[in-house]
Length: 241
Image (cartoon, rainbow, N blue to C red):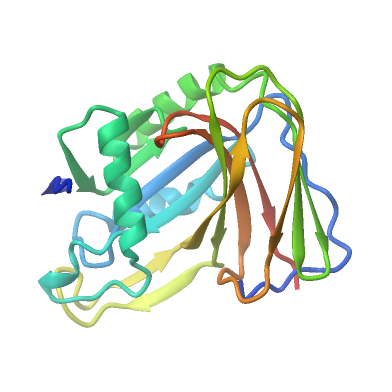
């Protein structure tokens, strides 16, 4: 069973200095975003599924914790209002009626109940068929800065380049709320989501400071149509100690 909510409109980075550049392949990975909450009893199966997805090279799996279930007894340790806002923006862009957990958004195009593995896999395969002709993404570290280079590609419309930093897996013992007594494992928990710049199809380079940024597991770069539209390209990079 999914949990729904009506819409209300209105690093510390441990990165190896010798890190190799990372490129998005011609058949770039599909981005799967799970919107979840440690206070939602329906979410642990979807979180376990996302943990499996993090081990795949053809998927960039990110876990966003929302804050609208905090009132039921357990304040999610990783929830941020900006992640809730991101989910509600998807509700607008995909023409949905409400936000819910656990929700998986695949490539910014379709959403599926996150615990429905067969359906999610089906949508991933469909997204893979549309994932060719992605502009290449290259990342390298220079001191405390991350340099992101995006190649030229044919693109219709304006796009936003965003960096999501995420943690290594967390194990949390929940003491209150619907999941009281459970031990939850959360993988690729997004800690920060930072807009790097705009992109219009031309080759571009962006520099972002990593100083003071949360996220000890790695980062993902997303090139996404403005207004939380479809993802055009994506690449990820682990942070090495």
